[in-house]
Image (cartoon, rainbow, N blue to C red; front, side, top):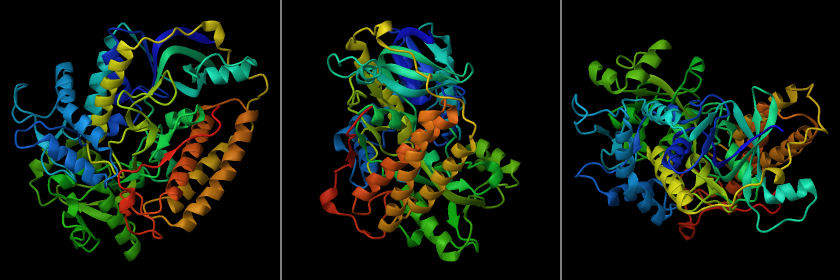
Length: 542
C-alpha cells in the first residue's frame, strides 16, 4: 500500500512558517515536513528585506502597531496586530540562539543588530542579514531541521488533497462517524509518480501564497495557493482574498525572471524617477518613496500608463558606492549580471504581484475551521495585514504563528489515525493525459486575464469579465482532472484557478477602494467597512 507510517504532525511546506513549527514541536512529536520541489524552493529564500521587530529603546510596540494598522488601512484586527508585535523580539532572539547570521553594528556576535527602515515604518526596526534575510533564515532553519531525529523531510512531494472523515465516508460509502476532522493528505510523490497516503494526528498548511496567479510576479513558481485551495475544498473559510500586494520595484529585465529590488533600497534613500529623471512620488504621498507599498505601486502603475512607458527607475547611485555594495551586496551583484551597476545608474523597475494578504481563516493558535487542520504563514488570514501588508511583517508572522501553533498542538492531544480507515488514492478510472497542452494553455490564459482584469487597478466590468472566464476554466479543469492522472502542473493549475475565483469573488464583494483593492467604480473608502474583513465560506466541502 503506497502509504507512510502515521506521523504526529504533517507539515505541508518547508519555508519559514513550516520549519519554525517543526523545530518548536520536534522535542515532543514525530514530524513530517513536505516540500513540493526542493526544500528551499519556496518564497522564504526570496525575501530580501528582513524581519520587523521592536528591538531599539527609541522604538515601541505601540508604534509598530500603529504603522501596521496604518499600512493595513484600518482593516487589521487590532488585537492580532498587538499580539504579533509584542512577540517580535522573542522571535528574533530565538533565531539568534539558533545561530542566524544577522547583520550587526560591529564585527562581533555581541554587537547590536543593525536595524534598517522600510516603507511605512516610523522607525528603524527591521533586523536583517544584509539583503538576503530570507535565504539566511531558510538556511538556518533547514540546517536545524536536518539535524533533528524527530523531523523527517520529504522533498518532491506535492499534496493533492486533504483527507477528512467526510471525504473518507464518501469514498467508502460509510456513514460519517463524529465531527469532520483532518486525517492527513493524499500526496503525489513526484519521483515515484504515484499518490501516497500521509496519515497524521494534525496536519499543518504552510504552503505560502498565490501570487503566481498573476502574469508578472516576484514569487517563485511554487506560489500557487495550494493550501488555500485544499482548505477551501475541505470546508474552511477564507478571508480578505481581494488584497494581493504588488511589490513596487521588480527589476524590469526579462532575463531576471522577476528579480525583486528590496524595499530597503528606498528605505536607505533610493528615489523613484520617470524616464526623464523627474522624481514623482511626492505628488502621490507626502511620505514619498517611504509610503506603503500599495500607494507606491499604484503611483508607478499610474505613471507607466499615463506616459505609455515600460517602466520607471529606482536610483540610489547618489549614495557612496561602498555604502551600496555593503548594504545590498546580493542585489548589486545580481544587477551587474544583467548589465546594471546600481552604484552608477538607476535601475529599471515595475510592480509585480508579491504577497497574498488574505488566506485561510485561523485563530491565534493557527487553527482552521476543520479540527485537526492548522495553517501558518502566507497561506492564512490572521488579521495582521488588513488591506495591505507592512514591509517585513511577513517573516515575523511566520515565526510568531509557527511558535503559537506548535504550543497549542503540544498541549492538546489528538486522537490516533487508524491506518485502515483511509483508502488508497483511486486511479482506476483515469489514464495518462495525451493533451498536456490543455494544462499549459489554461495556465497562461488564467494568469493573463488575472493580470488584465484583477490587477493593481480594477473595475466592476473587468471583475465581471474575469468571473465569466474563471467559471469556464474551472469547469474545463475539473473535467480534465476527472479523466487523467494527476501531475504537478495539473495540481497547481487546479489550485490556482480556484484561488483566482476566490480573489475575484472577494473583490466583487467589496464596494470600496481600500489598501491594495482599488476599484474605479468605488474610488473612496467606506468608513462603515473599517475592521470588516471579507469572509467567504464554502457551501459544499469535499
